[in-house]
Length: 457
Ligand code: 5AD
Ligand code: SF4
Figure: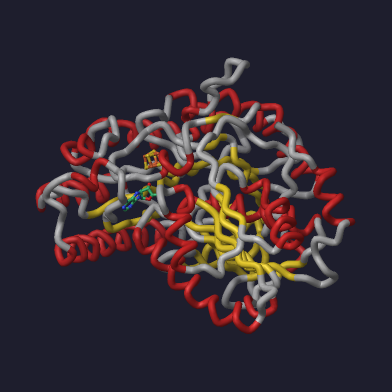
């Protein structure tokens, strides 16, 4: 379905916003949510709003929520509570809440009772209708709550206001069919749906025409891209088509489920010049027994075999991962298997999580939930092991010259530039400001715990 841009223009001329009205968006969770927020921002700008980083200056505040772990949810509750005072001071303030948390059974009603000053509640499948909801609140002064559970259509052509003008996220598929036993994503994001390749190509070509150099293709499980499309197409086919887009410099993608990462994708990375040597390959656990309980459909041995193949075929590849500690029934032996796997793979980076019970998931009903103190002790041990490996790997870059796409000035030092290598390493370096947006060679002089330091050559 094509987004009705004309309607947005009508709202603009109907003055849904007043001159200089500002919006503030806070986003929790993954890149999918980041991209959804960029679309909310795109629609709001089209009807005349400006963005602000200061809540107090905003006439609309939007919270785009995540529910993958309990602590993300708690942060949203805390932040919503704090808005009460702001609303009392400014009764015209419009508060909207959306995202994955809203798709959970009973959550929208819980929010309405606990935080009655919230004006708009919507979910992940209907965020394109936000301007309409805003119009209703403004015209009729009523609360709007609409959560849609059907996920049959993909809406193309929503205006998007991206954070960077050098690299962009491009969603290629929505939803997930895997039902890992700990995870709420399939319940809140629905079943897998792939965008048509021509829509993806058009979006990327438009980005290149606007000066973008890099895209990251997004999906919960990009390797199952293409199922259900009229045209027969695999993820590897899509990668090869995108690789031929002129003017594009780099292509990344995430996330790859180890059970679905096929040899043709590995060969595509090896053979296509724009595909970066970087794979995010969440392992979740190093124990085959726990992996089975998690419904991950691979064993530790199969995962290690896959990593071996990737490393053999793609020189300088960097592999990152997600790991969950303290899954129900995880023994000390299971945990040691995870430590062992981490040491064998030598990850370039790892997102480590403490298992969080999620309502309605099978793992929440499992016996033998692990006590918090054991979870924390294992978590700290894992983080130490991971950090040691990352530091060791980063040290191998000292004295090497690497290609960096320059993204801007460094976070902590205005006089320095920052960018990433092809395989995703963050580099802070001395160079000339004209290099922003370009590919440059950087000589690495020093490795730090999570980044590299160098100078442009
Ligand atoms: N508890 C902890 N971590 C989780 N993840 C998903 N669900 C949970 C949970 N219930 C992690 C997985 C996934 C990442 C996005 O979040 O590691 O890959
Ligand atoms: Fe969640 Fe598993 Fe789907 Fe990833 S693959 S989103 S962990 S269910």
